[in-house]
Amino acid sequence: MSTGKNSVSVVGLGPMGQAMAAAYLDAGYEVTVWNRSAGKDAGLVERGARRAATAAEAVAASGVTVVSLIDVDALYAALGEAELDGRTLVNLSSDTPEKARAAAGWAGARGASYLSGGVNVNPGGVGKPESSIFISGPREVYEQHRAALDVLGGTDFRGEEPGLALLYYQLNMTMFWTAFTGFYQAVAIARANGLTAADILPYAGYTGDSLRGFYEWAGPVIDAEDYDGSAERLAMCAASVEHVLHTAAASGVDTGILGAHADLFRRGMDAGFGAESSTRLVGILSDAA
Ligand code: NDP
Image: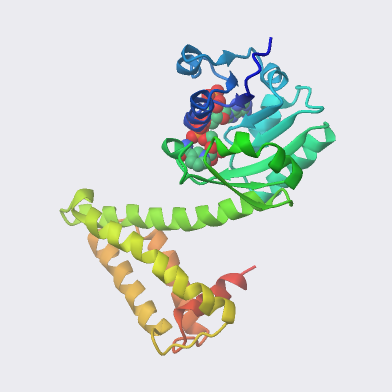
């Protein structure tokens, strides 16, 4: 029986789905939850969430269902048998833009309204005003469920094409994973030289913060295709990357990641771009396909 409160279902209770369900409980929603494995809903049920026996039952319990699963294939596995006609699914599971488009078609063919999303914060950031979630899909569906989505934090509507939210998400992840594996690489070199992660943390913070300035400098240069090398030359950057690679090799750590970086810079040099800005490398990456 409805209590007249806003209601939402959350399908998938990994750390992210649990944080989302908790945010809805905090906001006073009537929350129905489902997870494939038992036990992950215990804290939520204790706080008043209703446990659905099946994912189909969860979807039936609320007009809008937030999905937080490992990927789109898990969506099909969880909701393949569910009645979706007239329901709204907001799928905040990460996947590729292609998979997001396919899932939107899959849901539409079953009569559901469907939004795709990519979550830019960790579970601890869910519900905070500074959190950011990319959303794409029909604008009217987004507007209709805006209040429920805003419970999770700031949403950023990227457009109606269903793959867009995941495209923007994967662009962020491209930057995140390459930078973060760079941190792992630096820690490995530090440890090989008797330092700890703690020793380099202040400098890691400085370098991470400085990236914003580099992005803001390089973006307009690349869009203008003006690769003037008067401030920094690819040849200088290529030499720097070789120094990094050799420092890693001399430290006896894995050089696979850094070797790939050095290869890119060498290809730029071989193409004759040494006197131009290192931003010229975007062309080499773009032309690889
Ligand atoms: P987890 O890997 O911890 O949880 C994945 C969830 O998917 C679990 O509920 C799991 O169920 C379920 N699942 C996996 N396969 C199936 C299947 N075949 N059928 C049914 N259920 C399935 O992920 P998180 O909670 O950390 O993340 C959820 C989503 O949020 C992911 O797409 C992730 O990329 C995204 N995200 C996560 C962030 C984070 O920091 N955690 C940050 C930003 C985005 P079961 O418990 O039974 O295994």
